[in-house]
Amino acid sequence: MEEPDRPRPSGDAASRLAGEDLGPYSQAELDERIAMLEAEIARVSAHRDKAAAHRAAADALFGKGGG
Image 1 (cartoon, one colour):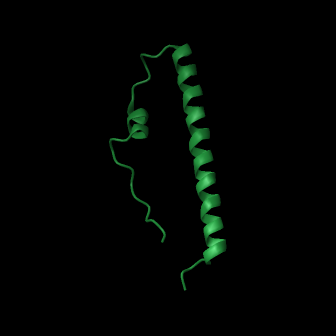
Image 2 (cartoon, one colour):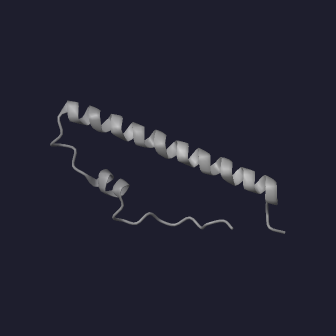
């Protein structure tokens, strides 16, 4: 069964990061932050790809469309 797209809760980590003032950070701290965020993007992308492969395998095994 397909899960409906749900809006992200307003208090989640990505929303808090997006609203954070970057002014107080040094260039080195911003570089570290960028590296951390790029690593997180890679982690989330890998998880998404794994989930998509799992879904494709299930669709191939059980058929798509439920009817």
